[in-house]
Length: 169
Image 1 (cartoon, rainbow, N blue to C red):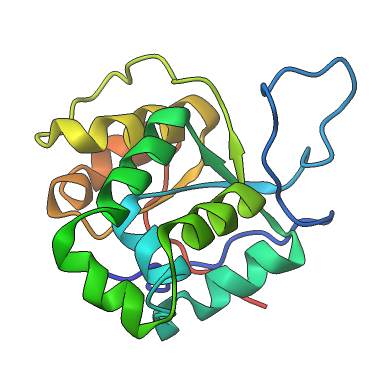
Image 2 (cartoon, rainbow, N blue to C red; image 1 turned 90 degrees about the vertical axis):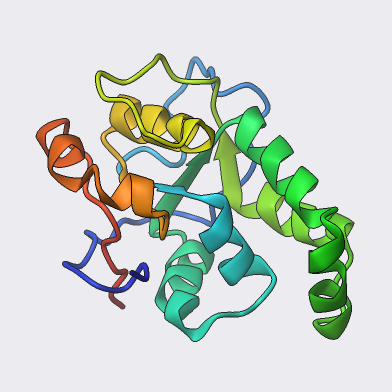
């Protein structure tokens, strides 16, 4: 399933999502009121490396600042680790990208938050639990192609998380 397969996300206002230094602020966040979204690593690769056309609306919404991309340091570390996989190197070369460029794009678009508490539901794939936990904690849309995550749709919806909502202009 791709990120553009269901209902539209509400449009928000504001400037482009950027990396927050610690997630704690005394003043309202410039992202307050934006639709929160958690994006798993495979879709991050589609978005930032492969320029997948299924991510065009997501890319446009992030660039327009109508979504707040939520991530954790562990998600950032996972992306960095995946970018070093030998099987990904030819694809990065094909697109003329270095891992540092992809990480800079991630840092420019994602707002880092501390790891979320364990959600009441558990994913069969422990590598995906961090995405579920963050989405549940923030009642964010979760974009994932992972079968183990998609199998949790009804449980996540009961917790206020919708899977794979598209972004409409």
